[in-house]
Image 1 (spheres, rainbow, N blue to C red):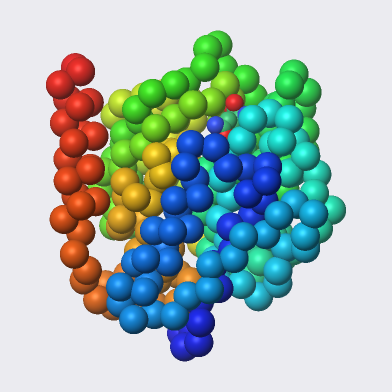
Image 2: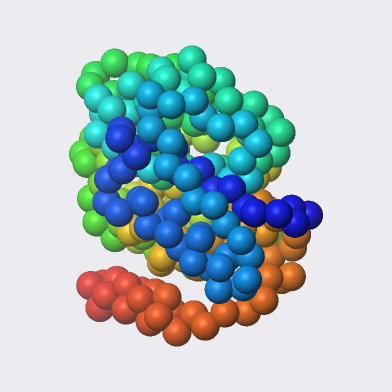
Amino acid sequence: MATSTLRLVWLYPDLLSTYGDRGNLLVLAHRARARGIDVEPMQVRSDQHVPHGADLYLLGGGEDGPQAVAAERLLDDGALTKAANAGKPILAICAGYQLLGESFYANGRCYPGLGILDLRSDRGPSRAVGEIAGETAPMLGLGSITGFENHGGRTHLGEAVQPLAQVSAGIGNDGVTEGAWAGHVIGTYMHGPALARNPRLADLLLAWAMGINPNQLAPIDDTWPEALRNERFGALSNAE
Ligand code: GLN
């Protein structure tokens, strides 16, 4: 278990930072501090080295051009792949999620991804824009998830990853499944930001970063996140 300061690294805010994904860093820092856990949130731009030895890494979404540049720089740097191999938790959103796979499309070209997750992304028949919701695998203990998606890509999962959720609204990977996870790496199409709308996902990542079980984290007041979740799920059921 990590006893010193938790180092949370948000990678490439200059390239991958759409739809409020920085909020994921703020939510993690808030939920850790609310429990008396010291955190050091760090923002690492694409012209800087990815730090070795952080406790958790975050990637946001982005447009096709910055997504391709981000993948090239992360491949050159190599430290994120080493961190994943060492079991460090990673949360990657949309463009960040796609580039953790084997390959993805951007501006009509296929690019190599980091190969951290066994999946491939191509283009769909239309852009997936709007609310997304799903039911997660019971072993993750996350229940329902909610977010906002805006992407042209579709993602095809290989055998070495599990879907994060089965889609109940929206498109996600392909209209059936949403996101992926393997080990301590989670990818998702959910913006929103994802962790503000899914506090249990935030706590799972914190627990992984600390080397503990999520139920060892002290409860905190989730009145506001729960109200946000209820409002979002309510909007979806009213739209049916
Ligand atoms: N450029 C990617 C796509 O359209 C990712 C978009 C995003 O991150 N919102 O699929």
